[in-house]
Image (cartoon, rainbow, N blue to C red):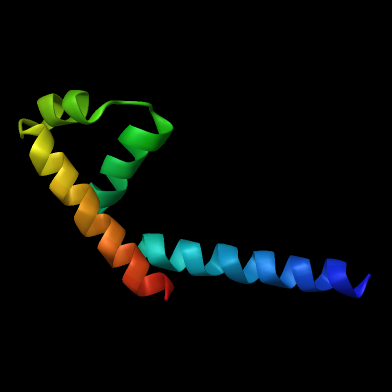
Length: 73
């Protein structure tokens, strides 16, 4: 029983931290993540849709990764 409570507390804390981290992303950063990971678009498709190069998308993803890593530490 105690282990289950610890797990629930850990999970709730983890979910709060992730929600906070994502709230610190800009709308365009959240839109990019949604398009790629929820909607299943490729980097090329997203780049074409917004008129930038796929390498620009890769750079934006790296920026997002660094930001999330910093916030989640």
